[in-house]
Length: 260
Image 1 (cartoon, rainbow, N blue to C red):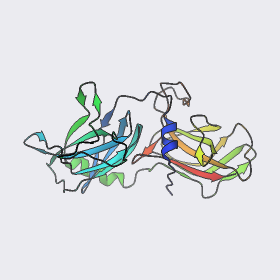
Image 2: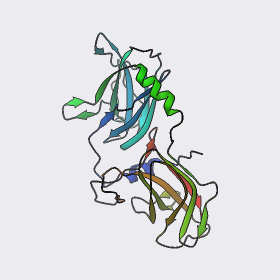
Image 3: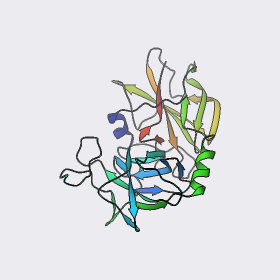
Image 4: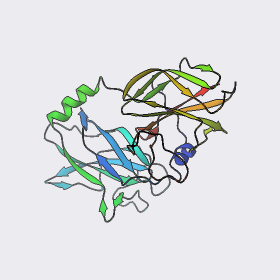
């Protein structure tokens, strides 16, 4: 059971005080399922969009696009973009990052538009990758049908003092299950009150020891983070620049509320 909990305030706070990596689109292991392209990881230094464009005679067709989906600042895992056009084998297309620049939370970039969501840049170059629909991408998409989807199951959470047990946690890569308290309905971040390492795959009966006993009636947040800085310890706090970023699925933080 996948549950995603996100608010604009929470998502922004999660990455406050932490410097994000250079924006990039990881095409390693990208899959194509009919007209849906899935990228294993998209890193952005600001909220925005990953946008698909046609490629004709080796040239990217712009500003017109054939599909887009929103992404959040930080690492976004398993991002799926639906194309308006079929993408049969041999079709060339491009993926480009844009920044949510005009503040209306919708993708805007078209002929005649004056208030647009500008392309994301690394230095003087736009963040764009050229792709071609291949049999390998399609085969990998079929194999992905049986792969793990990031999720935290809170259907039957067991609480014993300062230890919380979750029946199932699924992670697409090694990382951490992190517990946050809440205030006014939003997670208190980046501070956490407990965490437990989880391995890629399915983990059962995951116990997380908290800093203090659970308070009956209070709401807590269970959130997944990726072991992204390679030191195999959980790092995410004010002022840190090399952090274990929250797991994102289609631009949303993978997190779920549960009660004490």
